[in-house]
Length: 485
Image (cartoon, rainbow, N blue to C red; front, side):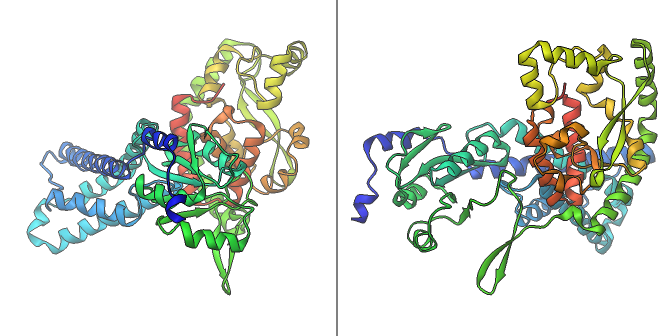
């Protein structure tokens, strides 16, 4: 009976042969080589910079270069950064930062203990290389993921157990986000009505095939998407068919589209899932406020020449004030005036409403995104400012006043309150941000509901590492001009 249940029909065999399974080994080797190259670049550039300063030759690799690289790669591996799939981006940044600093401390300690190497040791070179590595390694990883994520060999193969609505939605999301590294390659389900494929992923048969597929396709990751299964059936399924998977993820049906980060809790032998609202803690808000003030003052000093140039360009391009103050919803539902460089003609809102009334397609686009891709009320220089989000730089003043934060949920307009569907109860408990998670995930390509979901996700799961990740990603997204108009 068991052998019969594992027998694969001829058409399924053909489907198996057509499957292109990703390679965790190639993914790991690629990331290791990229990390090593970024570290070598940081070390060598640091040494060359100090050569120019001191007019002497510095040698940072006073220890065996292979050994030094091996220590960094080993530290990254122990932290779970290889093959690095399924790791939250800001968590990866945190792990890279901690281990990079730790390994530089180890090198410094080794130099101190190895007295013969002290002549070749330079604290300035080591400190500079550490700072450069903290920039180069995450950047290199981001670039290699952008380049390799859509390659069939990138990531790890995943088997989806369950072809219902939740399973199909999961397949769609994993296909849309290949940088995550989870590549669904097959689906199994006991429902005989489930046939064909979903978003290019073939449906291969009943759940009893899971062990056979795991062995044949070398699948170590499985995701169980059967939320309606009884506890007894689920326990039986786990015992009978999933012992082949070292990594098994159970997908419940009560979590919405936010994909909340939860912590498992043992409640006397009963599994509990803890959901925190991190940004609602007073201590978190204090830390965030200190960071806002420090970085905003530094930002104003750095961008002051650019602010002056933009102001001149606006003044020369069209009649009207340089700055535009727009009323927005603030923390706890208060109202404030968010400053922007003016990017539209005078009386633009009235002209926009007139256009929307006369063009049905534009009105439908505006209702979904609350913006128009080609807004006729935007001045020439305004398009450039919006594309690279430079029109929002004056909001640094709002940050200093305590009305906004550098990173946070989107600053919604008062007339959008009725469309927020009670999401404001969570979102408006935090300071709204100049940039945020929705900007780096898709900016204006996100629908209004997606923005709400992402903003709630941010409030619930805030951390310093997440803010630093968003700030770093903002520069990348803005420089590329992705998703903005």
